[in-house]
Image (tube, rainbow, N blue to C red; front, side, top):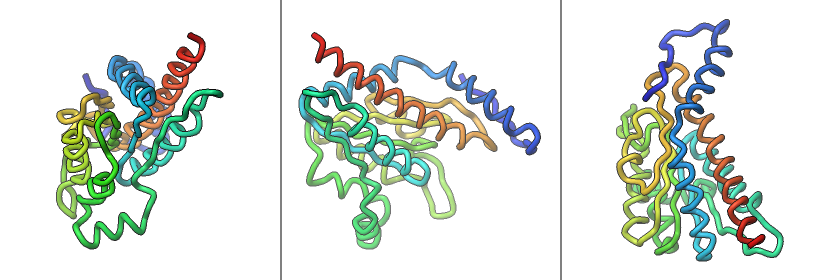
Length: 214
């Protein structure tokens, strides 16, 4: 199922169209992958495992926000804290790997000394690591990091859009925002991704509270 997105839109109708489509997307979004994502991170928290988050462009900012909220907003007094980190924030390290080994290496090389069995990698991408632009294929650093994570026995959660792309095929759990065109497509996908990350953090906190009350 997909939400039609206007190819031509003017400023007078943009706001109304945006919120209408946002509402439709939230209604059509499958719920089970969201629940599965919460449970995957909850089990990582139980084991004391780590969560790593990656993304490019606008999805990089979501990765930073997501890591912040997982680390801070899920805290329950008297319970251990979740170890969550975004891999987009060390600009010198990202630029060093880009300079030496190309941009597709930046996440896998950061994960190399850290990720292990039981950890979780969250990969965020509007097109799911598929598609092509002026510089060649988009987001090829995501599938490379996913492959490394899965080879170590880590779980992978994807947040994608449009047709799901590579993340829909590779991730253990993938939440796909089903838009099928621009002009509003990318803003809608990124908006829903932020909503999803907030709910996942809330859902995780509720799961930890349930354990605390048991």
